[in-house]
Length: 224
Image (cartoon, rainbow, N blue to C red; front, side):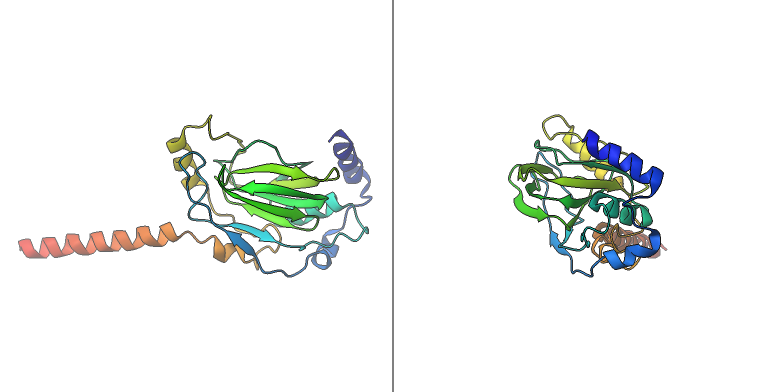
């Protein structure tokens, strides 16, 4: 993707082809999220707590700006950074230390999410895919013009272990520690991701702590 990196460098240098911040709201369509949940399959940890989210045809790519630059600016405005332009790896991998967003800037691809026995989903230009940490993914097939923009929330660190190379339990533990982002990469503070990614575990842990406290008080009362 040397050509794309060169284009990005020149665009940032000159501003040509890149939308200004004030133009971004007009480039984002309101879309309901499509969600998928994947269980730990014993090899790929996935993320049982947080669903994978897809916003279909959510970004306007009408030729007014460079499609990749549109995604980069939208993600950056919502504090999803360290963006790159490339495709999607054709080998199964996941990220144990960060969440990831993929903006489809050109072409189309069939991607298997959720591990070796996961689900094959077609993504097309204009789609946005938000992967919670741990979600297995790999490219099954793609058009020759596939172009993807990836980015990450501020908290977290990039890694790309393959299931057969990773320590499964350590990966599970690391995934549980990845913080939920404060902003949806597409819609910011008004995005549905914020509600979809509320951790059920946190509520369960609070309830468990309350029950433990009640038991402790009851036990103490019984001893008086």
